[in-house]
Structures are given as C-alpha cells and as structure tokens.
Image 1 (tube, rainbow, N blue to C red):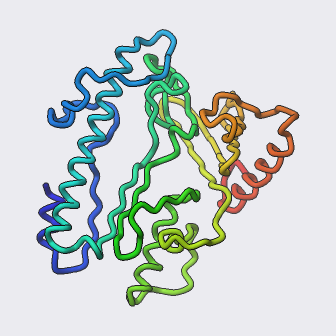
Image 2 (cartoon, rainbow, N blue to C red):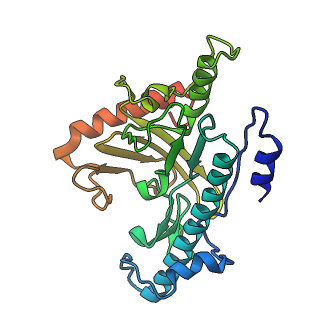
Image 3 (cartoon, rainbow, N blue to C red):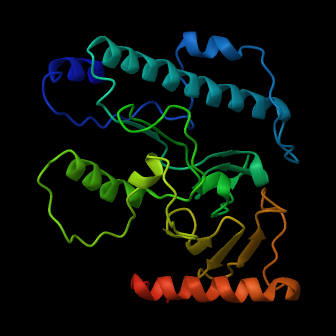
Length: 277
C-alpha cells in the first residue's frame, strides 16, 4: 500500500523505489488467507528427509508457496498502477531475491547458514539451492517480453547497468569509474556479447557455527573451498550432478578441473585482498 501511494505521489517525476516484500522464509505466518487458500490440502513432491515427518515438510511447503503467491499478488497491484498511470513503458521493474532457500534439500533448512532440518546442527553451504536467486527485469522500452538469458550475472552488475542506461538517456554521469560488475545492457537488448565464464563468491559466518567459504562456479563446475577448522572442500560436476550430491574433490579423474578452478579462485582471492588467499 505504501509503495502504491509513493508511485501515485511521484508520478510526474523521476523516482526510485526499493520495496521489500514479505519474505518466503520462516516463520511463514501470518500469511493472508487469500494466498493460503490456493494451497489448502495441496501436496507437493518434497525431499525425503530421514527422521523428519513428511507432513511437516508439506506444511512448510504450503507456507512457502503461499508467501510466493502473496508477493505475486501484490506485485500485480503495482503493475496495474503503473499501467493506470501510463508509466509502464518507461519504468524498469526488477524482481530479485536475496538468497536461495532449502526445505529438506540435502536434509537442510533455510539457506547458506542452514542447519539439518529438525536439529540445531549447522551445515554452512554454497549449494545452488542457497546461492542462486530469481531475477526478472521488466522494462518495455528496452526489453522484449519473454526474453530469457542464461548468462551468469551478479548483484554487482546492477550499478554499471544503471550507469549505462542513464548515459543512454542523456543523463550526466561520470566516466572512467572502476566498477567490479559488468553492465547487463547488451544482455537486456538480446545482443551477443563476450560475457564472464565464472562467478566468485565468499561467505564468512561466525554465529551459530564458524565458516569461511570461497566459491568459483562456471556453468559446468563448482568448487567450494572451506577455510574453517574441519571444513571439507567440495567439487561438483553441475552437468551430471545438478543437485550437488556427489562431491568429487580429490577424485583423480577430475584433477585437471580441480587444479584449474583452484588456480582461478586463488587468483581472485588475491585480487580482492582475501585474508585466506
């Protein structure tokens, strides 16, 4: 409601609005009845977790999807207002999550600081279920509806993208700024462009459990190095094992891949001044 009020009040000027929706995240209650009604009695294909009742997983899935439906319904209200005010064509709308989520996947609950479901035992991780996030961009003036891009992008790419779009609109923006990210403008236009072939990530955790993880991920492989005491390094073939169930770290058959990714990750760690480099 506040977001819609803001849009109406600023309809005649350039505006930027950052909106946090309800999180599809524990605790799920209270979820509006109109959203929960879609899932009453519905059953999902849930992971099998030894020692944890399936019905409890079903209940969590209902809460999760009802939360998603709440986001969808309210986002629709905002889109309707943009249409009503004639602002849709020239307004960029970005829908993005801040992290992934697990409900029983790998036997875990929540995200990168997960714990084994039904317990207090932590399992810090960089599984795709945790680190991949949804990203939808709507900008009719630039992006053709239905466009799908499978390149690897990062939240670091937003600022250089905005800079390029503002520059194209004739805005006075500085030149020569050093930015870590890459402008997504060519991707949004559907242009063929040389893009990154790897994403790097770090995650330090000191509450509930200690973890110091560093990751390099290509479209085919993922390497996760653990620098905390007792941590076990991880290597996954994402083509044959997209669920990351088989840790191949130390397997001599993929030693070349492991060495290459280890080298690339170490280079990146040195570049960013990582204390574990």
